Amino acid sequence: MALEAISGVNKLPFMNKFDEVQKNWDLQQIQIATSNFTNPYSLMAPPFENPAVNLPKILEHCKVRMEFDHGTTTLGFKYQGGVVLCADSRATSGEYIGSQTMKKIVELNNYMLGTLAGGAADCVYWDRVLARECRLHELRYKRRISVDAAARMMCNICAEYKGMGLVMGMILAGCDDEGSKLIYVDSEGMRSHGSVFSVGSGSPYALGVLDTGYRWDLSNEEAYDLARRAIYHATRKDAYSGGIVRLYHITDMGWRNVSNTDCHELHDVFENQPMNYENNPNMPCTSREWILQKLRQDVRAQMAAVTTEKAVNV
Image 1: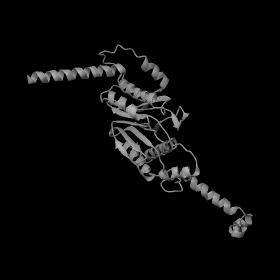
Image 2: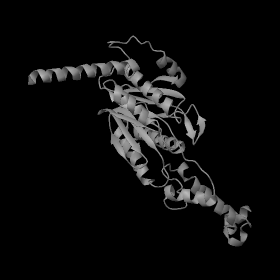
Image 3: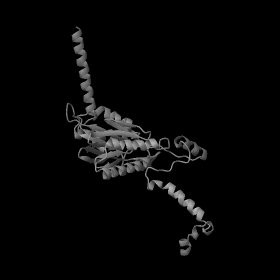
Image 4: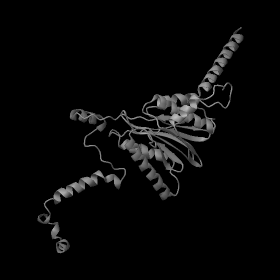
């Protein structure tokens, strides 16, 4: 056999084993299926066009029931003290709760974080690819990648796989040479800068709390309280959100994991708050008493404005 290999005779067709062709074909298919091991941007595409539209038709024809329902609640906002990110930890597949400890805030580097919302496999895979590219950028250019560059990179990836079944909504937050950044990127190739974002099935409830209590001059403790309350109220109303509320704070010194609190503990804290908050400037944002006090103040201001207008007209 060694002489055959040296002389090249073993490469002739009649010298191959009877299953050599099948083995070579299997090896080729394995290499195609695992091409992302060497090139993370190369994934096997579905063997039909427009999978987002055609896959349900194929499943219906084959009489296979496959649920793609998913849900989560993630949020982020900027304020005078930096950027706050907060998320729950429940991973669901339809009506089935797969995990209560899913980590939906990913550390991309020491100054940038990303959130997960959408398909768990899509989000985790592309967040890992983005973390890899951030590290390679630091090694190549001896400086951190900017938040805008990371967002553009993820936006280009999403645009390339648009219409192929990719389901992902990501909040990128961090600090670079230009200051604090908060950017939303989704699987449709959208990239948007903003001060307040919430993504997931529980985002309408979280945004309701944020709209009520958010302001730029929040203190750190007020910002933490607002983020926890927003996620907590979303978990109370949205069945697809729950588990542990993870809170991160990002400044020009880097990110910090502030707390990891179970929703049941937050329920005990928020439900048992004392009622004597009248005219208390340190009242927690978005608490029931805070909202009532704010409504009373708004009513008094409107009544005073009406009285002043009548006096002027007289």
